[in-house]
Image 1 (cartoon, rainbow, N blue to C red):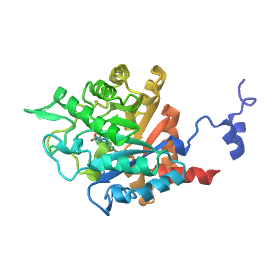
Image 2: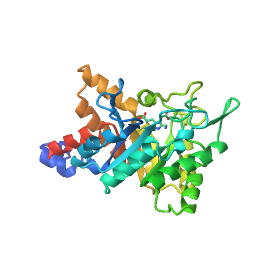
Image 3: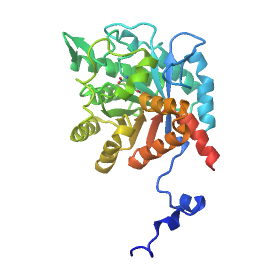
Length: 326
Ligand code: PBG
């Protein structure tokens, strides 16, 4: 039926009507709050390129998590900053490193909190790469055992979910196999299945002091131009035992989120990464954009594309805005 009988605007007359016909929901329980955990004590350090985001020592974490819980966020993703780095990422396997310590502390204090851990050695290697170096190359297979052992250390500390972000081939299988052989059959694997070699990770490397000391990550992270390859990566990770798939970054890759949603039946996670956060925050601080609205629009777009959960540095503020809306 054509205009003038058909008038889509009828459904947009009032907020209460718009709310009735809204197709996509956002809720605090869909957010995962990333937390940077550093060594030492009494630390809450600012990060130049990430306003309102901090590096915490374990003893300083509780207020941040309490704040998140109070607005309805129920999951966190931990990233560790070790005291020392070396070629072999020795500290990645330290049971008393910042991440295992934080996991034990958080699970003890907030048993219902879903605690996820990033499994990757780039923050632990002196060269800053996500795999071991052999000659001039980033070596795949020798890295797998380390990743699996790192995931086991996190599981033993009590992590509910381990999330490999390294993009080595075969790591999901290696992790699942080791976890299962040690009885950790209920520990979930959230695989960064589709992770692109992105400029949008810039501020994160600033936060973690973890950029590669030579070369870049293009020999293991995906080419932003590729789409079919995402299916292949996702399929492999599913076959190897992933429970949840991730696409990262989020906003520049909404098409990929939708592709995976249509093609696979695993729950999908999207990571609104540090550069997505920093650009919106920076534009807002200049007065060039309405930060809150821009974030809420981005987050609902990511959900609309097909993600059931979103990792975002804006989680707490977004949850607050949602509460105000009611
Ligand atoms: C690797 C890792 C990175 C991010 C999450 N895990 C950095 C990278 O691959 O270079 C980026 C997250 C962000 O930018 O917010 N351990």
